[in-house]
Image 1 (cartoon, helix red, strand yellow):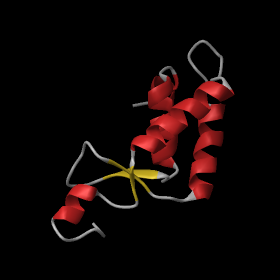
Image 2 (cartoon, helix red, strand yellow; image 1 turned 180 degrees about the vertical axis):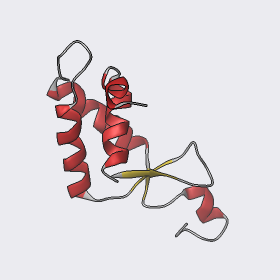
Image 3 (tube, helix red, strand yellow; image 1 turned 120 degrees about the vertical axis):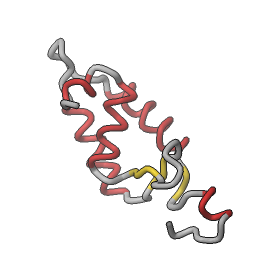
Length: 93
């Protein structure tokens, strides 16, 4: 999928930026679970990347909308490890 296809949807644009900068990852065993790595530099880089994404109409996302979506996605993510894998005894998966 091309970058421009992510840029038209705010949630997709933020997720793309977070994932490509390695600020988040997906648990390999629980594909519906997002894990926040906890790297402040990666999260800052993701915000800068998302801010530069250009929508198909030639505009960029408003800063306040980006901040809210970043907060929503990072707040929803598990911190550093998958809680389901931790229940199985190996939190470092």
